Image 1 (cartoon, rainbow, N blue to C red):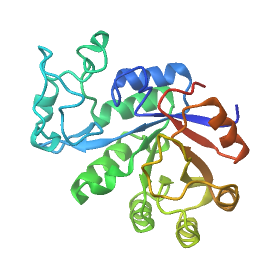
Image 2 (image 1 turned 30 degrees about the horizontal axis):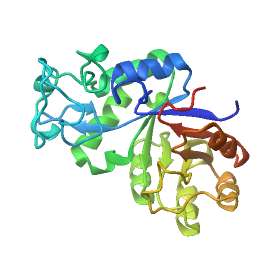
Image 3 (image 1 turned 180 degrees about the vertical axis):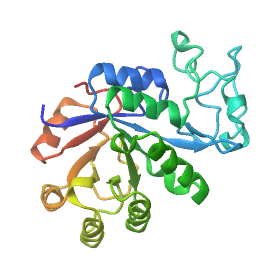
Image 4 (image 1 turned 90 degrees about the horizontal axis):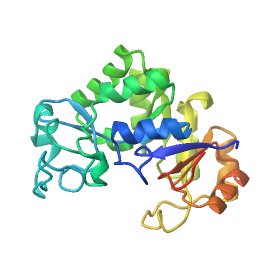
Length: 253
């Protein structure tokens, strides 16, 4: 298969999303990239979690639910490490802790499977963004860490800080924006992510990929398509020349 499959939040269809067990499963299953989300704690530690609140994916050690209004940013890392981030999906994952940035970078370095940090990183404070960038730099993990942005301007800020960074652009796919992003990011460092229209992506107002758009992007960058779940969609992706396909685990390498 010429298309590289990216595991959305790890192998999240069968494992608790954004946990080390889901990421290790993605590696074992043969996924070529892992997408993940960052948040920061009250003591400014970077952790991996999608939601701003804990209620959906965290439980106390005794299995009880967390109140709806408990936010990650109001909890210390020490407090979060007492919680369970696996049981909500299945009892067999009970005790799975929240991962830190350092832990997922260590996994990527060990397995050589790259990470794609979601564009939520744009919402972090400049200090927090620097923590993320400096940690990846200090650990020697820039070759296994890619950064997503929907902003051409923010892509420029990333490159100013990390000139060799892999940039994943998932912003507007209009001709002006595509021309702007491809003018500042070298082709070897750029993947443009386009929306594949299906029931999983119908909520998004960004125009869906067309053969014409894919052909234009392919002149300047790699192409990623999100979020695919069916074999026939993967065949479409190959026909469009996609280099990467993001899937929730429904598609297997």
